[in-house]
Length: 222
Image (cartoon, rainbow, N blue to C red; front, side, top):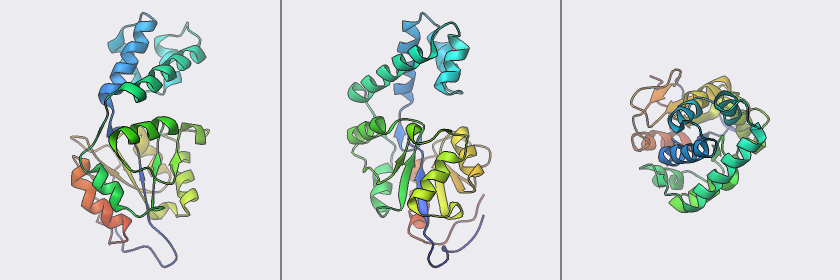
């Protein structure tokens, strides 16, 4: 995708995934799922392997089909909330500079997590919180549906074609592509299928993301 600045009267916005994109929560997620598996006497490695590829309710159906899924979800939420209070979180290098460099109202978070946990993690890492967070409770369909990203664009008053999405996971990339947005991948050794550009780290992407967010020319897709 190529182009110049957005036409007059239109604005550009940057939409960020959270876990794996701005905040490194891999160890936290592994610990939560291992603890959850222990409560149900399940193989923690197998549970975590499945959880990496599926949404929680689907995970429960696969690894604990004889258990009440709502009970399983309540237990998971309890563990996740405790982890936000007591776990150690780290923002990826470049995240603070990037988010502080974007104009208020020009960016948002689009996450499969819940807003209170995102706010807790941001408070722990010192990252600024945007005016808009589209979380799991805000939509009936999560990623890879385009609904979360389309909702974020609508609430920011931006056309989907003027939105840049920064993601690290295949489901999020598919969601943004289906929403008709430009998608850049970060924090992975190789590009996720479909991304317009790939950066090995968030830090590498900071100058170009800031350039997009401030209305500079769009870099060509690769």
